[in-house]
Amino acid sequence: MNLIDIRNLSIELQTATKPILAVDRVNLTMKEGEVRGLVGESGSGKSLLAQAIVGVLDDKWKVDADRFHWRGQDLMRLSPEERKVIISKDVAMIFQEPMACLDPTTTIGEQLEEAVDTEQLTGFFWQKRQQRKQAAITLLHKVGIKKHEVCVKSFPHQLTDALCQRVMIAMALARRPILLIADEPTAAMESTNQGQIFRLLASLNQLKNMSILLISHDLENVTHWTNSITVMYSGQFVEAGTTEQIFSQPYHPYTRALVDSSPKANMQIPSKSRLMTLPGSIPVLQHLPIGCRLGPRCPRAQQKCVRAPKIKNFHSQQVSCHFPLKDNYS
Image (tube, rainbow, N blue to C red):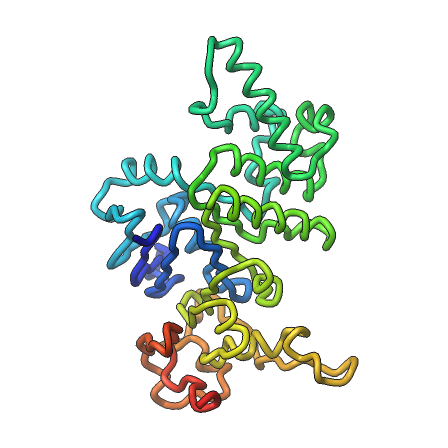
């Protein structure tokens, strides 16, 4: 059974004039214990999709899907309140901007203690209070914060962005989720600290069988830590497959461009040479192209691309393209 199974999920932004389809019929499937990457440029809708799963989008966003199953249960048949109870218990998310997500009026220690799962506490109330404090310290150590004495007494504005990001990760782990959604979890960190956090997430997956949805704009970085990858562009599903398939044999022109822009995939080119890039930039929400949204930038675009492509399967690899690159690998 799939842990999460989403089919044709769309997210509309309600505006004063007309709704804007920010995410257009995206599919996402994850198995228990899987580490899946969700990759695309900034503005591709990755964070919106994650927030729709967690259920934290406000009223100006309308979410709809043909299928939205969590561990076999159809969440679209439930009320928003019932859906929130299920998701908040089993899913945790590390947000991209930690400073905006932490309570500025409460110390880090108090916020961490509040996040600790009550099911792991035993005894009388004074014993539970001490257990909460110890659990908070253990979580800080787990994410690499050794000087917990200073951290627990500090307010968010007294810490660096990198430390706040580690605190956010600790708060997410405090709930012992079945699925952890990590939205650019190391964006504010140096490369040495990034490796430490990724190794922590990998150990949680291996030891606790925690499923992880790792959101990133960096395809090369994601390939080191994931089993499978889903690629998005401008709110549309592009391609999905195993990490090896996506990196070594992409079928979509956009995925091919992401791979070509990676130094790891271009070891043979001379030093200081320019890497391959697509012309142009990702469209803004107010001016989305019709049909395939990559069309204005795609080197293989034809008249047929004014219609949205259907998903095709190539050896368990899903591709949404009228003219996939399958001929290059035949």
